[in-house]
Length: 467
Image 1 (cartoon, one colour):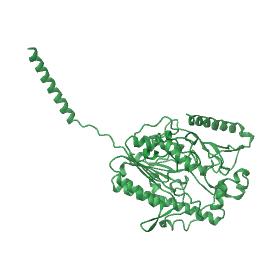
Image 2 (cartoon, rainbow, N blue to C red):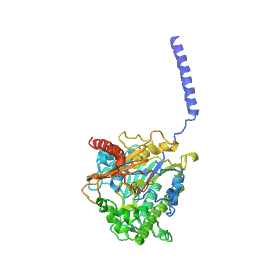
Image 3 (cartoon, rainbow, N blue to C red):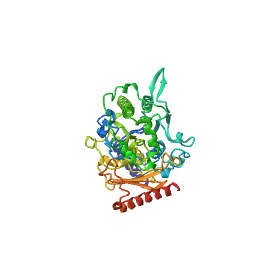
Image 4 (cartoon, one colour):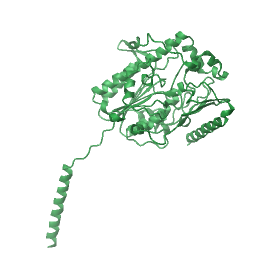
């Protein structure tokens, strides 16, 4: 009798189990959204207003403008170090220069930092990772294999021979990027596309080289002279600031009105060449059925003087050198969240956590930036209202070690080897940074406040570098 009851119970339990399994089989399980592809486009020396969308009435950048108009555009984006080597290291690692301790003339970026970089973590998480273009940092042997499945670094000159034709390097980058996209459609990918353009070829008298199809651009326009390009402004600067690399390269590019016209137009043509390549890449994404799930991020690695203050180049802490374009285009966003232009300060160290956030990868706690994806939902509370920036290249008198603090109202600048030389600008009212208030006793308390700000951040970053 016992056995009969047991068999009956077992029969009922099995029937219930089968019914449950059938119910599960018939139930619709919600599909998880596919992870997005990510293309991070980095231009070299493109300043924030070398973009029509930023209000530049001369430059021709329709592809970049479309990305900005349909995505997140940050009009107040900056780099934490305005030089390509250190800035690119910050973009990989999410760290300030003083912590990752890499710039020109330094040993390779330590593996411990690269093993927290966005390509390393994405590859580890299952993304296919690729790199095309200017790598720009020195790393230890073998580390690139742990970063990228496909690694296609490039170098000068700007014109290379391919199949009997002279092809501009920007178009070579475009071809390599398109090949990568077409070859990696089976799983989510992250392509880092790093252009050399519009960096000048410093060894050539012409300086700027562009694709032939950009020849006709800007032929009949007049490039305006910057307000602070007046020789009287330069002559009033401290002697120390008259002999930097910025002035040396000014003679290469802007020392006559005619040369200024020629060089800025060349610089713009190089950016228009990159813009054309972006159009080809977007067309490829559409052809391959990837356009609706591919996020495109565009940024410049540092700003650039176009004659302001009697300067050329970057390196210093003034606005043309620090400020860059930054666009995040996410086609998955609803129309109501497109075309936003948050006024908040965004930094290059924010791009690293942004890429990881888009990919659903945990962000390391040691990063110095924050993911910018929060701005797709509105302006977040507690976002930064100021930032520290630095340039720490050693043993080069033409490129002084410099640091600064910039907030929504003020900018403070100081030079390590010239402790008596400080600059304080009421940036909100003095956007061209003309009137240095550091010597005015009325601002002595404010000056002391910003000194403490710089000291505090610098000490924290130095302590982190020793861990």
